[in-house]
Every structure is written in C-alpha cells, then in structure tokens.
Length: 195
Image (cartoon, rainbow, N blue to C red; front, side, top):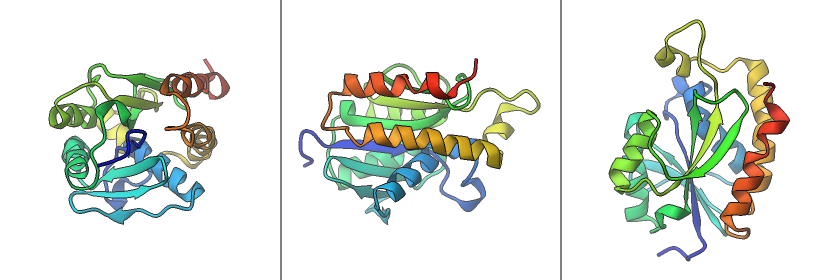
C-alpha cells in the first residue's frame, strides 16, 4: 500500500519510436523531461507499464496504445501501489487549448480524449486530476493526422521551457496542497501563450 501522501503522475502517449516526438505523446515527453531533471530512470513494471518513483511521486507511462491507457494504469494500481484517484494526475495533450498553455483540473468528462476515456472506464471514476497541455487545433490536416505528426523543432524547444516551469511546481506535489499546485500551474499560461 502506498503512503497516504503518495501521488501518481501518469503521462499519456504511444510507446513506440514512431510516435515519440508527436503531439499526442506530449504526456510522455513531459514525464521523460521530469525524470531526467530528477535523475530518475523508468523500469518495466509487472504489467503493461513503465514506472519510476521519488519520495512523494510515482511516474507512470502505460505501455499500451493511447486508446488503452487505462489498462496500464489499472495494472499499476493492482500490482505496484494503491493510490486514491484524487492523488492521480494524468498529463495529456489537448487540441481545444492554445499551444504552450496548461490547465490542471479535477474530474470532469474525457472531452473526447480516448486515453482519458480509457482511464475513466478502467478506474470507474472521473475523479482524478488532468493536467492538460495545449497543442491547438490543426488548420491544414485532419485532427487524427495532426496529433500523430512530429512537433517541429522550434516548438519542441518552447515546450521544453514550459516543462521546466511545470517540473519546478510538480516537484512539490505531496508537500503543498493540490489547490496551491493547481493555482501555480494554471498561471503558467500567462507566460507562454500569445493570444
């Protein structure tokens, strides 16, 4: 059993090289950044996931396609550590938000995101945190093709600056109250988004 103040950061993406630097993998990209910054290493779990951990956090990357993300999350919760849904933060892309924007919220519908749909289905609750990273809507290609396209290098560099600020805040999960974390994350938008 996990300690009561243990939290789980779940990054969403597709775990195959073809998808590594695509918009849909921005959850994976952030977790990789966070792990490297904190000198952490992902290891295979006892199920369909890779994970790492600090004193206050588990980091989790489901080893399934995006649309089956909930299977990897449930595997982890059953085989490694029980963590309450309200201590789970799922990091994912959001086409309804401008690029480089972030929003942390608790609960709600999937908003059409198949990875979130899968997690809701397998956890049988909507009451977990979602950390949305804006990737904007495409103007020149179908959404399905857009999310699987590679993020241009100039945009990758800007997302890394965003990740730096996000990491600084998220290192305090389990130490600071989640409402304070939420407020700090949601103010980042003003720094990076040009409206």
